Length: 279
Image: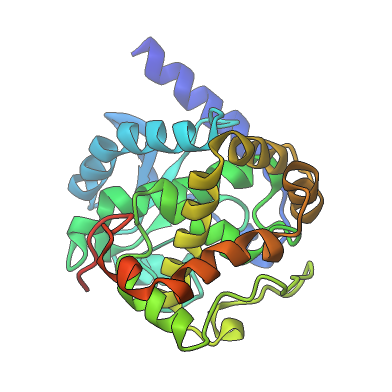
């Protein structure tokens, strides 16, 4: 009990540190209540059984994220569990999501993960915790870090979570058709380049982004570790990449695309680099 009391106290303190940078961040979370067995999980009343499933998956997901990010969470993570569609839509404006981290660094799960997408709970929880982990250190949205790295790193961390609805083979086929993640696109503080900017659907974008980040890590794990530590220390992504690799991201990652184009049969038959993808 002393341990959970300490965690609860830390959660309350961490909530004061959030920067209100978006009108959505002003929406009260008072309708949620902490789960008795784990105060890191806050639940829409009446859906405590769902909350218990989240609490059961949470320790492994936290361990997974901290290992991948080479750092502990800056503050104790909190997960909000919506058992009803109305609850989720109140806080998450983007349609068709099953989970999201919204301003300011609030991780919210939808009823889908207790229903038709029940099996996705552990992997999607890890994916969103990866976003939360980064958000705690550099803010909810950092425009110098490209979306492909944001999402690719989170999906890689979650063993394919968030990228399940496209296969590696589909991602490779898109590349050979001339549809690849635009590594030259630069976001601004108010505009983020999304999947459509690369002429990819959202599923292909997530999968291709995950493969790019996975390739970068596999080529040189020591440099990749230096990169993720630098960006978590609030370094500009482009500058950090140049300092560590001596090249622009597009130049370095051309090797990934060249490999796909030069050896299509090899890539189509190699083992999937993340969880099997079955819509």
